[in-house]
Amino acid sequence: MNGTLTIENGDTLGAVRKVLRAVLASGAVDAILVPLRHPAGDAVTPALVKDPAKLDLADPLAPVLPVSGARLVSMLTWRAPRPRVAAVLRNCEIRALVELVKLQQASAEGLTIIGIDCLGTYEVQDYARLAKTGTSDLSGSADPVTLGSLRPACLMCEHPAPTLADITIHRIGVESAALSVETKPEWAGKLGLTDGDAPAARAAALQKLVAGRTAYRDSVFADMAEKTASPAALADLFSVCLRCHNCMTNCPICYCKTCFFKTEVFDHEPMQILNWAERKGATRLPSDTVLFHLTRLNHMSTSCVGCGLCTSACPVGIPVGAALRTVAARTQKVFDYEAGRSFDETPPVKTFKVEELQVVGEK
Image 1 (cartoon, helix red, strand yellow):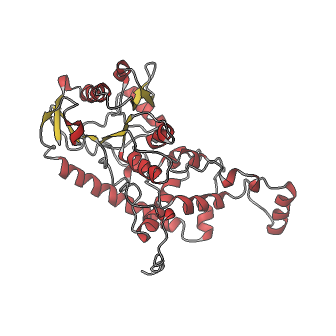
Image 2 (cartoon, helix red, strand yellow; image 1 turned 45 degrees about the vertical axis):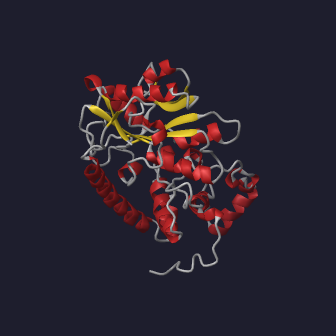
Image 3 (cartoon, rainbow, N blue to C red; image 1 turned 90 degrees about the vertical axis):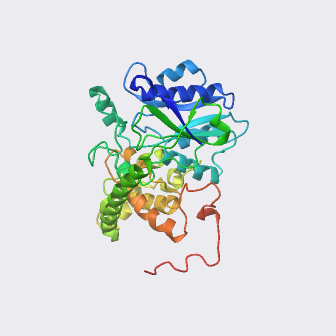
């Protein structure tokens, strides 16, 4: 159902906090996972909140994503006994969580998902700078910033509206004095909402936003296809890779307890490295960087949700996320699978069909 909550004195964040307090007071959850503003600065980081008074610092509207909430929900739910948690998540986080649940790395048991329309996020350092100047508020428009201001992944995200949420807070196409909230029936009577309709301008605003982002996404795909059209081009794309593994560490889907690339297999003997240099004339160090990225592409592409946190984590600015998304778009199409679309779809890595892959290579 759709409901509304009065926004007093133009304080949208205050209205959102009121919803969060109602969720915590309902008795249906033990705690809420939500971004909190640090009282001593401009940083906004996720926290598990048990004390309602701490929600005075909650700021899920802050346009910054330092870490995927999906990974944090996994930490809270991966084994029993587990708390009953409400988690405030953007749609890329929800979709990543769906994949983790299907890969048995998280559980939806006792979980309440609070989704929030996402207009995009800034890099952490950019958000801190903009917050100091008061120019980081995205609440007023569905297209609030110029191309290039947001994280690259957000500019090409075609899923700004939450899916599979128990409670959804609308921000796109909302121009009223009331907070628009969509809930599942079991939450309708717990949040103190007044019956109301979804914002009339929401559908058109979403369509416009998605169209612009999809067009930009396709241009990125075309550019990345050129940059990876040959082994030499691929090697050039990853030529400055430090093999720091930050992209892997920050990925919400990458969950292997022991990574193959962190084993002794890649602790090469000094004379072996010298032999490579003698055979080729020169050997790049650190080694195995392209192999690392190709293995991740192979491992992750069917579950990639395009959050772009891999790119954000790269210290040398490699567009890791764009490369992965370009490959993921193709592999997911082959398997007629979209990462994070449904809890009921079985991931390709857990499925075998005799007839699959017969069309690979056809135009």
